[in-house]
Length: 211
Image (cartoon, rainbow, N blue to C red; front, side, top):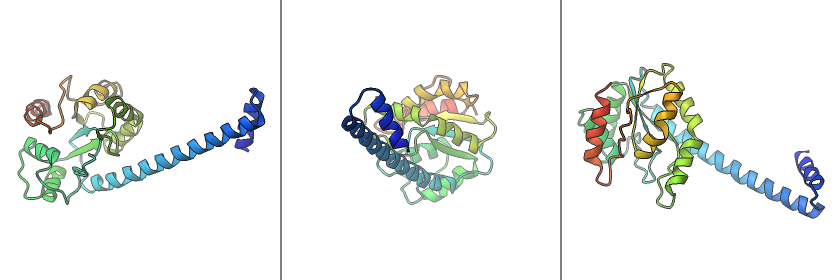
């Protein structure tokens, strides 16, 4: 029925029958591709959340918001990873804990009431993805981020620390407008890799000590 309505609308707009059917076929093709892509993204999101929620504290004291799980596969909440992973190593140093392995570090992170939330739950940090595309993805998934934060903490006063330049730039004002307690106050905390480890340590400590 929906297909017939589309064809009728196209015919009413002056398209020939062949044109109307061709346009409708293309619309259905793209709709199918978009639906499949969205389903794949939701499956990916679910798998990452399963990793994360294993270490979700009962009483969350603070939240770190980042861009997305990395393309490298070195996801913070993958307990089978290595303690030398850039983000994990930097966060453990920030909280003053020296884990013997990732499992012990993740358990300590949980014990302290800390959790990491990603703005997008599928890797978007591929080199071929231009910055604008990555930014658009963050904004596209913003409603899901808000929903996730509300699920984790009913109290919007729970402090949020934003990490990564584009996350800070795109989300601080939006989250504050939505009533969340963002600690950055304009401080851009870079991701702790590619020579930014010391800057991360200094700026993250500056923001995090305000808890």
